[in-house]
Image 1 (cartoon, helix red, strand yellow):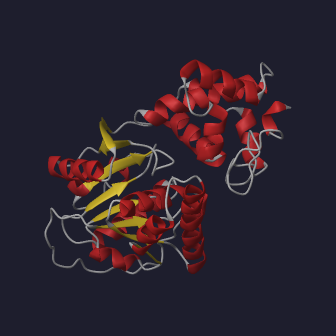
Image 2: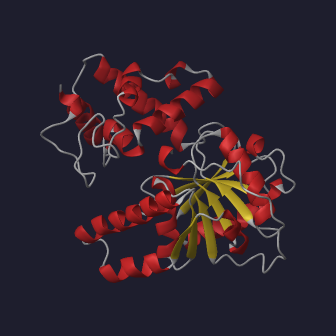
Length: 319
């Protein structure tokens, strides 16, 4: 995501330390404190695990801290969380700019931008920092882990974890086996996901896995219907909510994911699979050029207030 990009060019190499108990996972590292990173951190911490978030600079540290507070304050307003629960969760989360602190964690999840070179440099750095046997997971939804980690010495410790936003509320997690992922890595990861209330689904590495590959064409088609003037954004979403019993329509889902992220996913899938159904709708490109990213910017296909709540009477798609 654009708000959690981490440059690793200037990071210095370090030597791994001695390994502890390889089966114990009580301290989780997350590299990247964007929307997904914060959601993953909150999920782990709410189940009693200690969490380390690594950010690129102090401004991002403050942004991540503010984001965590705002997310949980909204939950408190909805009576879905208490102040005491929020305080307990935050007490388990540490935010730092020093990736070297990942030497103390038992499990690492990267949640940085969907950029191949960035993720490749990050995994190569992490291998020099973490203890031997530490599992390194990626939250990528479109990129090949096998290619990203092809230069690593211990590719058996690499696995994919594709969470669905909002992470604390969505049960599903796709556990993605790369070419060299070991059975032991998969077993330990599956057990950890079940421990934090997730329902894991095993998938083998392929562009888009399950959720992204099925969801993206639906979002794209809804955008084309809007662009062609067949129906308003409000009616498109209403029809899909009622027909499929969805909590949100496809255009609001796209706004929540971040339209620039949806565009990146479409472009990646179109490039890798070559299928016309993944070619981004021109209307999506237009909104992204105008920096209308959805909920995070206050406007996408619909308009949103500062708390991310849709403004029903003044939305983009009804015109």
